[in-house]
Amino acid sequence: MKKVRVGVIGLGHNGTGWCRDYDKSDSAELVAVCDCDEQRLVAATEQFPSADGYSDYRILERDDIDAISVHTPDHLHAEPFIKALEAGKHVFVEKPMANSIEDLKLMAQAAGAAPGRKTMVGQVLRFNPHFAMVEKLVSDGHVGEIFYMEADYIHDLRGQQYMEQWKVDQEIPIVGGGVHQLDLLRWYAGDVVSVKAEQNHIAYKEMQTPTTQVALFSFESGAIAKVTALYGCIGARPPVCNMSIYGTKGTIRRNEIALDGMEEFLEMPYDYKGHPYSPQVAHLADCIINDREPLVPALEGAKSAQACLLAYEAATTGETIQVEPLV
Ligand SMILES: NC(=O)c1ccc[n+]([C@@H]2O[C@H](COP(=O)([O-])OP(=O)(O)OC[C@H]3O[C@@H](n4cnc5c(N)ncnc54)[C@H](O)[C@@H]3O)[C@@H](O)[C@H]2O)c1
Image 1 (cartoon, rainbow, N blue to C red):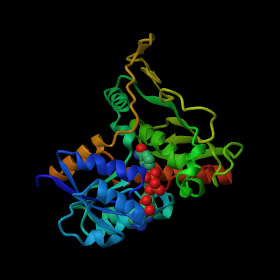
Image 2 (cartoon, rainbow, N blue to C red):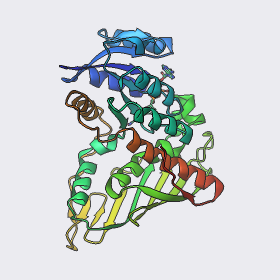
Image 3 (tube, rainbow, N blue to C red):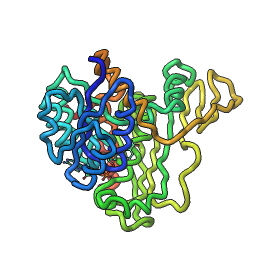
Image 4 (cartoon, rainbow, N blue to C red):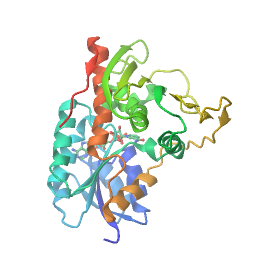
């Protein structure tokens, strides 16, 4: 296979950005686009003339498409993901993998039933050089045994109600936003076994879900982590990621590091330039062409979304919730 032939479903801001990166990729080729919104479909076929347009899942009947890329709203990922796998395609799906545990189970089962197909979840921060460097420092043992971590997703997202109504009605901050952070912490420290959480709805009341959510995750390793998601902060988000990792041999606090038992902090270059999709495009294509396992396959992405969904449940019920296997 010279280039992976891709069809994109969901042509909002995110899906169109992916179309752009598939279109200019050396290893992928954008051959079809799909959206049930006619205006968006027409705009995409004009912007990407090499792609044929579809208003429904007939895009999946095309034998010459290798991979489907799913960019529908959070609560509408499951159907196109599962149908694409059943049609024999490799599938990418944006984060959070789904917005309900039921959908995650169905998606994980569908991925398990299609072992020859690659699946990948868009946990974009794993492709950010800063967070990838932290993973290398942790896995090479410079931090020692992790005992505590904290990270947050703090944004002024009040304007998003003017973009897409589903973000106001359906998005859950600790899931839609917090999954970025929790997924990184799972990458560094392994699986979560239980979660407790609190929330309030003082800020940004137009959203359906409480907009301040704070979760405490317990990991199988014994580590604990606090993740905060809040969408109603006044002013822009902090300029560098608020993430700290505390281990028995080292500390990583934002862009400061003290490793291998040294107590003095050094500054780590912090080069955070938003969320480029092209490294994920290159990785997905490489995994399909060279038969490699994606960094975030379905079950891995599902576990991150599951822990965050359970955090929302824990905040709502006030209970500590144990994580059960999805499949
Ligand atoms: N990783 C990141 O950095 C990042 C950034 C932004 C958004 N996202 C994620 O990307 C996804 C899309 O976000 P967005 O902001 O582009 O949303 P959006 O609402 O702007 O776009 C979604 C599109 O999907 C279409 N759609 C819905 N159901 C469909 C169906 N069954 N078939 C075909 N088209 C359908 C809608 O008409 C809409 O055009 C979300 O899951 C979001 O959380 C990820």
